[in-house]
Length: 173
Image (tube, rainbow, N blue to C red; front, side, top):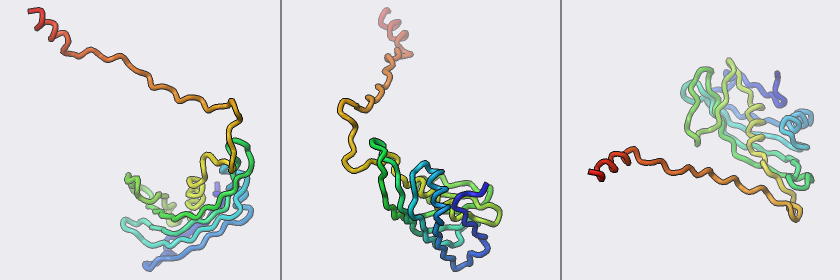
């Protein structure tokens, strides 16, 4: 299945000096992505990336993502417009390469044979940047309606010490 925002790039086209790519989603691509993300609309989606070879056959990409999105308020369901302007740091790794376990490392994507999909990587970064709880200005819960309390942690009774029996034996002597 082809992703909604498909921008394949053959890695052989990235020279040793790097390559600059500008991606702009069409109206149809933005509508398809909005449907995929479950939001009313994406008015703008563009990214500028500078790609260059990295050690181990990887491709590093750095740049910016700019988007205009409309989400639904979690309280009123009114449209909430948001502008996003985010730095991007991505890494495309060869098939079979071990992904980094460093939480501070750039997000990683697999190289599919000799191709990377820049559009899908940008779309995934957009999905991660969306506000999980968008609220319209001044939106509040109706009076009397409160959020459920946090569940209390179950308290287990203290376990007897494994040495309690030895202590009793010593005391009984």
